[in-house]
Amino acid sequence: FLDRMDADTTVAVLSDHGFCREFGTYGHNSGPPGILILAGKNIGRGARAQDPIRVDDVAPTLFHLAGLPISDEASGRLLSELLDPGFLAAHPPRNVSTYGPRRRISESSSSPEDAHMLDNLRALGYVK
Image (cartoon, rainbow, N blue to C red):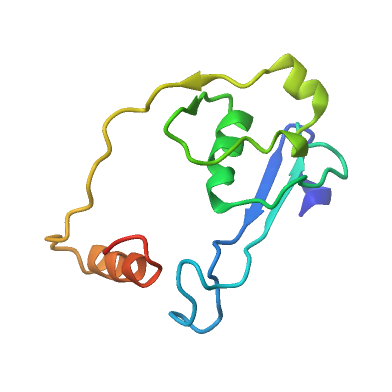
């Protein structure tokens, strides 16, 4: 796949923490570590994370790569050590205080797909 992408493409491959072949076996905090692989444009060649990566670090990093500011509400950090130093110098991180009010997921959904999604989020510990 990487051999076929053009020079303007960035690829992110990631898994959620707690991923398992047997659904529901692992919870939010007890699962095996996930993976994050970044390759392509604006990614440092051979770069490795300096500190353990948390799932919360993925969004700020992808936002920055997309040219979007990082919300001050984000709990993760920009994984700057994985990015090309030239890209970081030309595009320093920008912040925004918020992206607006959070919407709540309604548990009174009439969609079977939404109900299934809520069950999955509960199993992972994201929704009580």
